[in-house]
Picture 1: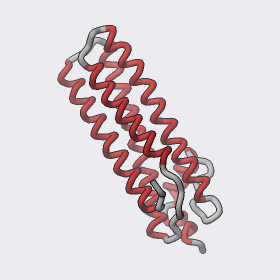
Picture 2: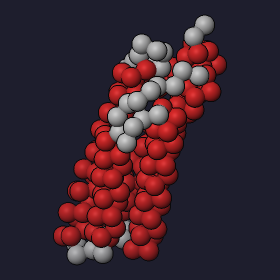
Picture 3: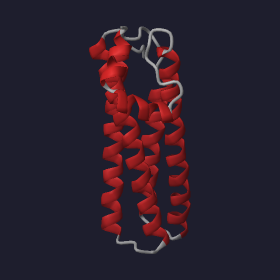
Length: 168
């Protein structure tokens, strides 16, 4: 059994879940580069959706002459940085050990879960601004949490890149 086969067998539930989102989700020797490319495209696509939501939020904040517009701008800049990091890295050598493949699988799960959490926070902020429940300190705290989540997201992605041995 191949190293990916062992990982796939051990993490059957997780791989099945990721396979519904990323097609193909298969880090076998023949499919690893395509799978990684598809994961990275999904990450950048989802980050762009978050950024578009934040752009709408920024427009609302400016209309209301809200201080949170600065917070939105900072988060959008963080997203641009994450997208840039994801897109600018190129392949060098894909790992073939079971341990490395497990790390990549776990990183993929963390990254996709983090994106879902980030989207939920943005929706909550958006709802609060629209409902005029603008308790500014609470919204500022949510923006700081969002920036922390993006920072953690980037750290996981860069660790993943190190395992995959992506060239910068």
